[in-house]
Image 1 (cartoon, one colour):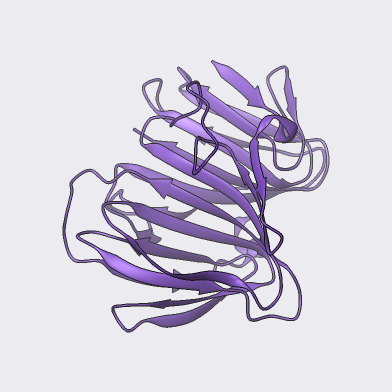
Image 2 (cartoon, one colour):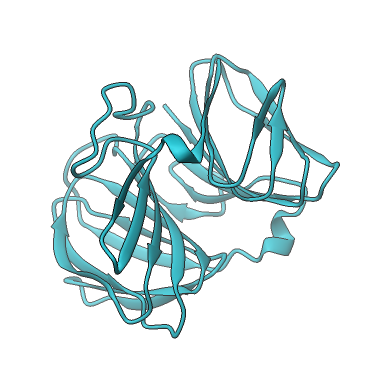
Length: 231
């Protein structure tokens, strides 16, 4: 099964400082057909104005992965962590038994990002935050794990049977990802236009995939891909 979810069908909320689009039910947006995709609970496509952001607020029992597309985001939390994550890089907050954090755009330009929430395998545990650089050149023509609960992946750790991966693909080239038919895959091109079998997707469209042992993505334009593989 391959289901295209065009960007213009996503939930949306423009708060002025925040222009948010929701692939899944979130806040005041509710679609009973788009509550989650396996353990993938949230995929928000956010644009945050310069000098604004999310003030301190709590989370628990959720793996929260932030993929910065343009600009940068500055994180602070109740564990004493502070860090700036810039375009192309990734941060992970494993909320565990509970943590408070804030996310601010302290740049002179808008920041755009994907915020991805994955339901953990178990509740509780000590909260954790980490960030890492993932140069786009290292993902050219292949998927690279960015955050993972799978042993052996050189990625930021999450407490879920899931992976978040990134790839860059030049126009006319293809990349294949091997999964299994019982997994839930969700793919979003951050940039570019792609094709999977007979389905074409534009930048920021969502593609929900299951019952596939592998997928081959062909770039119709130079593309930057983000993929979640979840139970």
